[in-house]
Image (cartoon, rainbow, N blue to C red):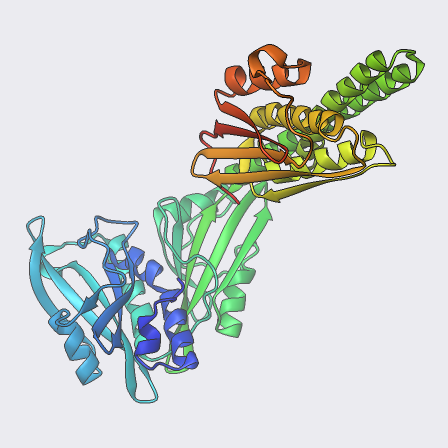
Length: 473
């Protein structure tokens, strides 16, 4: 949890006090899950008491369905006010939820004699709840963590501290003896070849219990991923400290063998896809090289130019496959594609005697690879067309590509400061092959629109809709 709430500064808390509150915040999700409670953290501000953090339990129904983070309370729950003013834990009954009475526990967090925050736990009242043995153990573990917070103990949790459905939980005493194990924990250890966990020492079960040992010795929370006996298990160990002594360990174990196997399969699949893109790119570059060689044998300038334009089209598709071979992703940053295409055209089509610069500005965000291929071809045609026709009789010029992403709409404009369109130019009647390709790709394949204007040069604007891809500019 990060506390970026501006009310903290208004409250006049020091950086050290804010860090202390953040350290407590790293524990509250686990407390919520173990205690079947909604946890809220309050801090003082000039306007009143502000809720700076709130979490809901993953293990039960939330009794506080609303999100109150950031809200300022002139009159917060009475237990919270009492904890702030009295500096002691307060327990009170209040209200009902689904027919069950609710109890609020308010725990002060102190620093140098000052209450800098209060955390509240809201749960079903004990008299209306008959918890099972496992639920009792969970609640007892949560109470141990709350007592540590109340005593100002920081166990150094730096990892996700939630308790999820498939997790197993162990209680280990200060001698390393397992005093309780949930059914999920028993099942995980049985797969590892260990039966009857309760009463056994972690030193004798023959498994890698380094996280628990480290937590016992260093008095700091530990998270490690252990692979043994064809299983991969995440082990989290949190020391329970009372009066400066470790009285035991809460250990949470999770079997992630299947998850890691799927991740490995995905890595292999991604590597295969990248290799395919790499080979496609190489083949396209070979074809482009052959066409370039063939163009040198052509005697008529028109035929030579036609082959060179084809080389550009093939090379633009190769650019997309080259980027895919490096990223392995199904989406691409179009600005990177545009930069590669303009660099290719600058070096291969612009005559050395002409000073024509091609620049890309703005950002197009992430787009799916099929769309990237079509847009790469469109951009290639427009830039090639500008290089070939916009600067006749001139030795210099500029071509600027502007990219803009607003929501799902990607706009690409290709501007040049050349001689402009001929008088009476009609897109429908006077389009060359390149513009016909642009029209087909934009309107038919991409379902977008395009417009060509001539004023101080030529400007072509393309607008397409990017679906099901998050904006990443």
